[in-house]
Image (tube, rainbow, N blue to C red; front, side):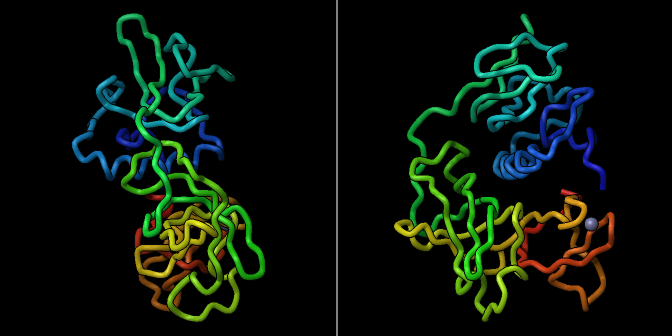
Length: 242
Ligand SMILES: [Zn+2]
């Protein structure tokens, strides 16, 4: 399915907005945001409201330079306005100034048992390295004790894993549980844990869950080249439709 302006809950709609690869991660964040803000349900283009509480990360597009005057914590690049920080978009309707209000308060510490959303940055023979983006339920603020985390091959799932390359791939977005904050170890053992978004190794587009074919369960299919890839999937895998 095409991600377009028929899904206004995802973000503010702006004409001519470009989608770059750097935004894929941001979409994940907003998917999360959507789940948490059940009361925040703009239904139309009128979602360009200050009350809509759009949460953004550094580098997210927040509008176009044509529409808005740059306010605090924003920068302009190629006709678009971007956020420089993690926070909420604020639009002053009177003077058309767009700014981003930083999230205040004590940034969350990573603790054992926390569920995190992160991105696989690299794979070694027996570990997957993960950059943690946010801690679930603790708000999308920057994390205090953030360092590169790792999933050991023994913590990928509750069954024996022979080859970690069969379970993860760089750029995968994963949901994992923190099991050791000293060594920054994560686990994806459990039905809801694992890869929640993955990209085709050839085409770099988001892979989909194939429907119907029992033989292909647990695998993902590329909507462009038809290639099947295997992952340690989370039950929350969203694919390109989400
Ligand atoms: Zn492909």
